[in-house]
Length: 126
Image 1: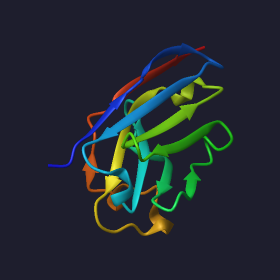
Image 2: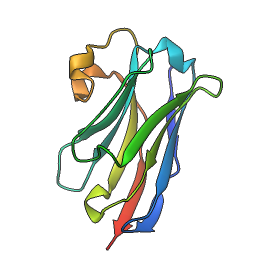
Image 3: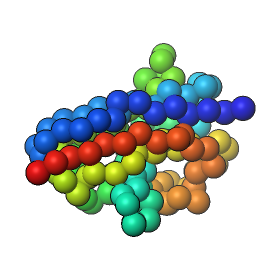
Image 4: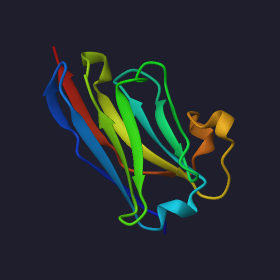
């Protein structure tokens, strides 16, 4: 059974930095693409950043220039470095993977992914 486990969430002040990590139970390079999503209270889950097995990346406009997604095949992890955090970044962050197929045009869309982690909370105070 494929598993994704997130870690690294926490509480920081505005302008601070957090690094989230997603540990996969299988070789991350086997997934056509992986991504980070987030969900704030009362809002829909949204795609934040995605990474293709080829190394290509894409970001939501709201985090472009502040977040960096990266993968470590040796450790089977997918990380996201979150810089210059803002209160509106406060959310539960989820790691996701597409097991067999990934339409890169839909890399930040929920239906692209069929494996999800349990999430890790990140809170940014002003």
